[in-house]
Image 1 (tube, rainbow, N blue to C red):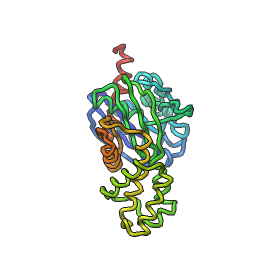
Image 2 (cartoon, helix red, strand yellow; image 1 turned 45 degrees about the horizontal axis):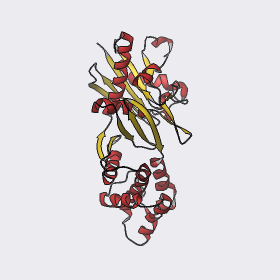
Image 3 (cartoon, helix red, strand yellow; image 1 turned 135 degrees about the horizontal axis):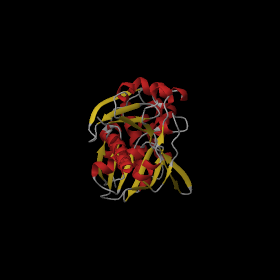
Image 4 (cartoon, rainbow, N blue to C red; image 1 turned 180 degrees about the vertical axis):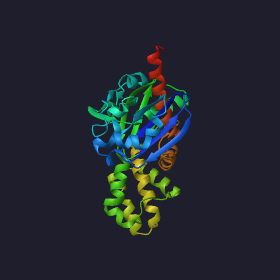
Length: 308
């Protein structure tokens, strides 16, 4: 039996899928044991508690992606400089050495990527796997792939290689404004904000024709003051403004194809906003992560076997 344990170990969550040789998901697990909740010396213990029974089955190997490979993670996996293709990520896999009692474990971490944007370095970690998964699922070698989140990553792939990417701190800025700014005083105190579609769409359009979020953001307060929007819709307005600001700076062209990969609630908002810009959108969820890790594992096996 040959199986791949595909692990997405981020800052806040740990997710994994057990895959067969064809990339089909056999089982899934998740936990709140993200990097920020694990002491650096405790990664091995968490891994064994979550996946030890899976790894005990002969023929099971593991590939991990995400912040587990950061300087604060289990083992640091150095960034691969762009342009970078799947061969580069396979060639820079970082093996993890478990404790002596688990010496037979086959565990490796996928490296992140780095590039230079306007003479300033940029980095990503974990999104490279999503990008490779999207390419494999679409059966293409060139694409624009967007992974939204706390830090959105815009990835341009040319001829199967990650040519360049750029980071937008959209989710983090939204969170700060939503929780810490004067705007928060007008909004209901809750962690999950329901989407008011028409209000969100209107805010995106306002952002696209504006000069700056520094100006448009204050409209959330004034529209509350003058009763133009109910409190429950203000978060949707703010969300539309910050996402619209991100897209305004990207200069989306009519008919441009964008592959969107992320959590359903967030990709729904980005898909709406992108379509308002005239983009053609395909959305993907966690299946892109598993597919990307499976593609890397498949390439690694071919390299070991001397295949193409």
